[in-house]
Length: 487
Image (cartoon, rainbow, N blue to C red; front, side, top):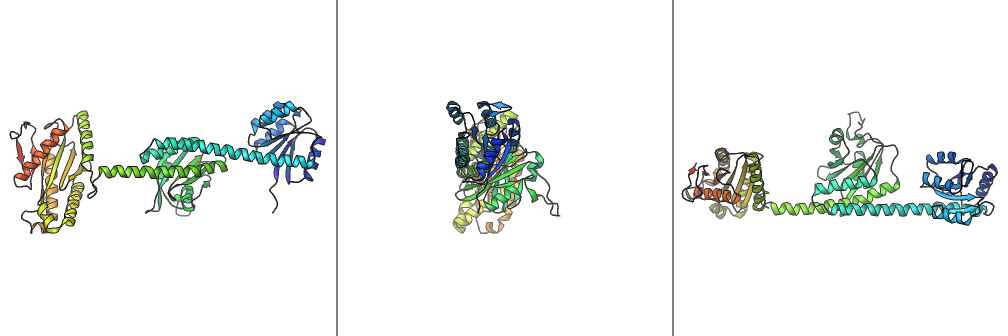
């Protein structure tokens, strides 16, 4: 297999010198060389604009430029190409300065053989490639450092996603992009973060099957995927196999996000200008994908632990700790808006006897049954908590005691009917008692509101259960003198 040729651009105004260079390289080894010539600096710069030149052989004495200024102009115009100065100017000071400023070599005409010239060209390309690799690696490390610092400040999954997308797009110089998380059960990608997309784009890529579009193929193949012109290609099929353009961009690049050896999502960047992505950019995105994936997984662990600390393990309801936070928030909202809300405490009637007769496993099922009935029967804005054992609490926003009493009454009827069969073998029918207090009419602090609702519940239990007791708005704060109404 032949070696890949090195593309050379010789900027030289002397036809005889240009012919000599061509002859020297044609017979030299190593090779081969693909040589183009330009007799003016302006012509050479125009050719370099098209790219794909590996090495520039540059004369410093041209009709439209002379001296080191010639080198500076070429170097500024095409920093990605290696430059070898090939000139008649035998000046060591100029040679040292040229190499110091970025020239790969400085050769004097008439003092170099074909073999020497060929080796200088090959070494120049290799050194330039090494410089690019070092520069790219430094850029990657700097970007990863920025991302690490940014993600280190975030512990919530949503914050991690937004910070990761913003930092990565900024580092890559991209204005638009997205992060999808993988839903393994559904076999699809769910949009979790986006930037620079319009509403049509967001809706179109909100859910994408694995294997479809650049993001889907990146997950399916486990590698970086570059696509031109559409975010999801066939994600929106018109029935005839033709895909609608969703993200009309110059190019898209998608890289999988990995954590602990498995893919958890995909990050996609969009470039609206013409042209694709360099190898360095795709490598950067691949390495960033591992960093982001780990950060997402860590945030999920922290979030799960936080949710577990605020959630009852049996029923899945918010627990007492969460109740205290919500109650303070609801009081602040009521004070700000001037609207009342109610707090109710509930306790199952006959739970101890039921537990003793049917066992703790069935007792747990009974608790789950009540929690599900409460959440499904009350309004979506009403929040149900399990406070411990068979005691529950309900916060009912924008509600007075009379509406709260009726709502709990409907729940009681529904739930007792569900357990009529069990009730026949108990001393008393399965039901629940409740106590209801209203903020701010009954109490203007959280502690006082809890005390009144709990005291009203105790009164319900002591008076036979299977009822709700409300503390009226005119009740006095002294125990024994409050007016109570049992229903």
